[in-house]
Image (cartoon, rainbow, N blue to C red):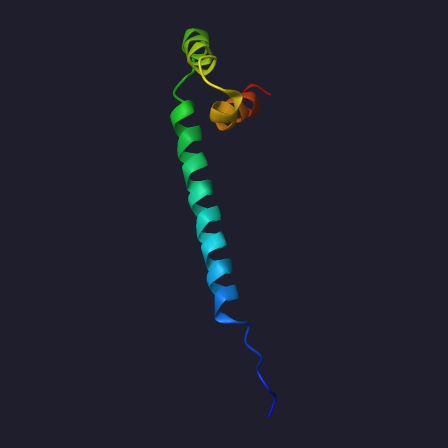
Length: 72
């Protein structure tokens, strides 16, 4: 009979936690992209960029990335 080797429980918990975090991040970014899709006019985008300029690049990186991808 073959022997089944199981990874230690902490490894599984770590992998599950990482997967959960990855899924949450994906869902959050998709929701942000949907919200940003409502900014369609140049005036809306200019206002949004003015707001973003008041914050650090680190704080606004995800939003800027989504806007840049949309503009491409």
